[in-house]
Length: 246
Ligand code: AR6
Image (cartoon, rainbow, N blue to C red):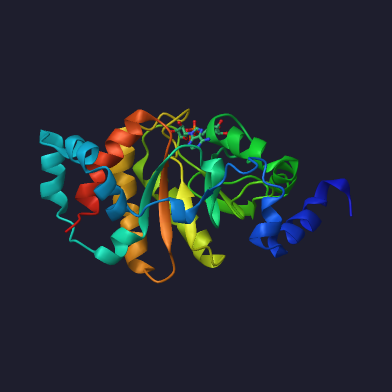
């Protein structure tokens, strides 16, 4: 086996380890975050009702959007959604999504953070994937991340809604194909790639809801990992519209 595909052995070993064994090698040490520490959307709302309801309060744009959408309360779907504020590389879940570029050979932003935390075998595996088209998604091991897998997707540069929608759909399809039940998304394309934050959240929340409705029993949790204050505000504003509570 050449040193370039040495990752295969390591990947196999890691994926066959139990959680306790894997924890010994997490690059973040004991700073990992377990799923049970991340409240579902209804529990999060209860804990943070002041800031969420303030964010959701009257705004012509929100009202307009609400009128156009009219989503029904679905308690089961609501339990499968979370927001998490912080670093996606700390999440001990089945898979985290990477906002990568077409080369899949690493970069800045969340891509850089994921490669640093996963270690060099992630790059070795990515080198065998022949890149990735915009809107598509490919899976690798998670190596020294607490997440077992990384699903790499490539968002559009600028506001291209059908491409951004494709990223979320394809990432969730790849998750389904790999029996991944817990998955976290960063705010794809809204950093270096310049997709307007508010336009992104307006698209992403309904797309994920549609996927969850179609595959209710297959996903345990979809986590929106928010790194910037602007996205915290926007998700707080739009979650009560797309995922209304009782
Ligand atoms: N955890 C969660 N979210 C993060 C983290 C983190 N550790 N670090 C940054 N973010 P970006 P893009 C947020 O620029 O716009 C790379 O160079 C960040 O604040 O990472 O899709 C790739 O190689 C923002 O909200 O991704 C590509 O060339 C979000 O992640 C290009 O950037 C996405 O920002 C992709 O650009």
